[in-house]
Image (cartoon, rainbow, N blue to C red; front, side):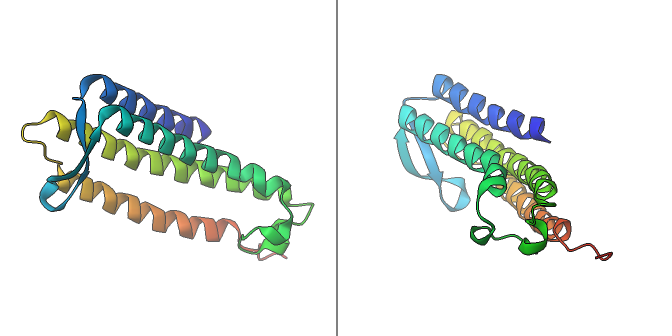
Length: 163
């Protein structure tokens, strides 16, 4: 899952850099109802902002399991924290949490990739207009996955019944 997470991050970086090369100097960066642009920015500023956002999200999701391994238990909010962060189970908890974070990160980056591609396509169209329906379907899928992932996280950190 780590490979998918890193690959989805790199795909976002590539789309962002390609957009810098092929889009006009002034680009729509926000869209209102009906997919019509309501905010514009220089292409370079938009690119730098998106590269920063992608990098911050990547670093946060990639390194949060390492924090779980090193931070004091009292600073960590995790289901059944006392059980899972006991010294004999902490490494198992970190491994589970890593997989879950990389799964969620992949979903986040796939949704961001969809938004990035749709934004690039919108800025290449005349008139500039976002394919709002496609974005809303992608958002619905992402939100459904987020609900599923949250349940998976809670289930992964249950106390085993054999205890």
